[in-house]
Length: 453
Image (tube, rainbow, N blue to C red):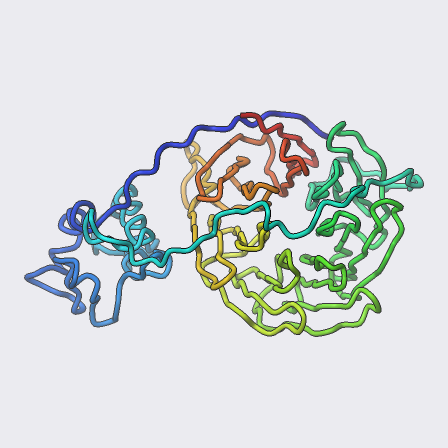
C-alpha cells in the first residue's frame, strides 16, 4: 500500500545569541544553586558565584565540558530522573526553559559575557556538493523485465522494516516477506520483485553507484545471510555469511569489495565479496549490532549497538579509530553525508547527532528531537526514540521518530520540515532528485511525501 502526501518547508526562526554566564546563567544559579555552592558555602568544594570559580569545578573536578552538555556533571545532576540524586536537593526539578538555557550555554562554548569568545575550536563541516563521493553513471541502473516470482500471501501487510532508494535513478526497493518489491519513484508503480527465500530482509541498501542492491536478513534464531543483486538483471551476484540468527545490520563498501554484517551475536564480521572469505571480525561491542555503515570513500566503517556504543574502524583491516560516546540507549540508524565529512546517528535516547568524522566531535547534538506530545491521562516517561535517518544529495538530514513525525534538518541542525505520519514510521529514504521523501511504517504502508517549498 502506498500514499502520496506533501511536506511544506517551514521558515525557521533566526537563531538567538548564544547564552553567556553573566547575563543568562548566573541569575539561574543564584535562584537554584548558590545557596549551597556560592561565596558563603561551597559544598563538595564547588563555588559557582563567579565564572572563574565555576570553570574550576569542585572536589570532583570540572563540572562543565565545552560543547558537551551530555558529558558535563552540571547538566547531568540537574536532569537526573532520580529525585534523591537530582540537584537542587529536596526541590522540584529546575524548569525546562532554564535547563535548556544551561544546555545551550555549555554546548555554545561556555561564554563568560556577550563579548567573550567560545572555547570551541572552529571547524568547517559545511556541505560541498563538489566533494560528493561517486560520480553519476552515464546510464543509472534500472531493472529490465524481471521474471515474475511467487510471493507469500499474508493476512495483513507486514511492517516495512527496511527500504532504500537508488542514489541516481528513480528506483525504490522495499522489504517484503521473502522478497523485495521494486517501485519507480516517479510513477510510484511496482516494476518488479526480487526473491529472498532466506527470510525477511532486515537491511536493504543500494551501492554508491546504484548498480548493486544489498539485501540482508534471514530467519530469527535460525539463519542469516547477505545477498547482492544486479539491479538491471535481478541476478544474484554474491551470497555472503552463514549466520545462526537473522542479520540485523549490514552494509556494502563503495567499491563493492567488502560486506560488513552483524546482529544478536554482538560481533561485526567483514567479508570479501569476491570469494566470500571472512577477512576480520570486530568483538568490541557488548550488545546486539544495530547499524553498520561504510564511509563514502570506503576507508572507514562505523558500527553501532543496542547499548549506545558507536565506533569507527579502518575498513580494510578493522583497526579502531574512534569511539563516539554520547548515546545513552540503543542506536537505531547511521548514515554518512555524501561528502564524508559527517556521520549521523539516531537512537532510542531521542538524540540526533551529527559527528565530525575527522575527530569524532559531535558538531550538533539534538536531544528530544522527536518527543511525543503527552496525551491526557498518560503518565510516566514517554518513549522519544528516533528510529531512522538518511541524508539526501544536498546534505539535508531526514529523520522519523516515535512521535510519528517526519522531520528534515539543514546542515546546521535547523528544522526545515515537519509532518505527522498516521502510523509509526520505521524507515525513511529520499529519492535521487530530492523531490520526495519515502516513509515505510508499522502498518505496512509506503508513503511518498512530496517536498514542496
